[in-house]
Length: 315
Image (cartoon, rainbow, N blue to C red; front, side, top):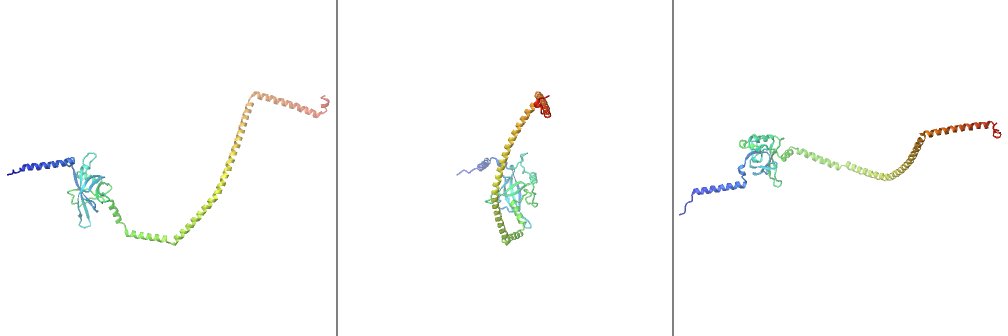
């Protein structure tokens, strides 16, 4: 007969296997599973969430801080009031305070302060090829915190307000545009342009403008022909004036040399007349000349009165 297996040994074996599996998971994850601190939040979107799936990332300025865990659909009593609640799971250890080092999204008070500071969620395009979306969380202090009053998840999750995507904003602007009126104005403008282009007045104006341009071209050609000889004469005149100026400069140099010699002569004369002996001799010479002139005058008068004295002599 075979011996029956002990239930105690089987239990110990199963518990040990489970313990080894858990230990292996902890070793592979580096012990992070024991440090996980996550909080679920609800986000309400009015527009389409096509491309957003369970497991889509939730990021803050490019840092992955969570994932989407559930997407639902809530229809209001009027039927047109449709909201899409999206449940996200945020890793609080990825959103820490620089002052305390603790999580900023772990408690109810902290998320309320962040929402007051402008924390909002927005759909963003993850891949242009696949059309996949992700949720971007960031601070938009200039936007209003539009919270859903009839929130069926209020007791279970805190709400993070959402803001429309740029595409939704553009869509709303386009939806409010008077398309029919703009179409009529566009067609009217096109018809007006067509009439203007094909009008006889425009063709005549173009012909007149072409003739005016041709006359202007001929005028420029004639002016160019006339300007060339005038320019040559101006160049000759300038050359003659340049030569005259050169001659005048030479004459001025000669005058400048003559003036320099005269100045030297005057300086020599001034030095000569400044000598006292020279002045005394010059004064004596002038006196002797005056005496001689007086004697000559007496002699001339005597000869004039008695010319015979030249023959007989003075008596």
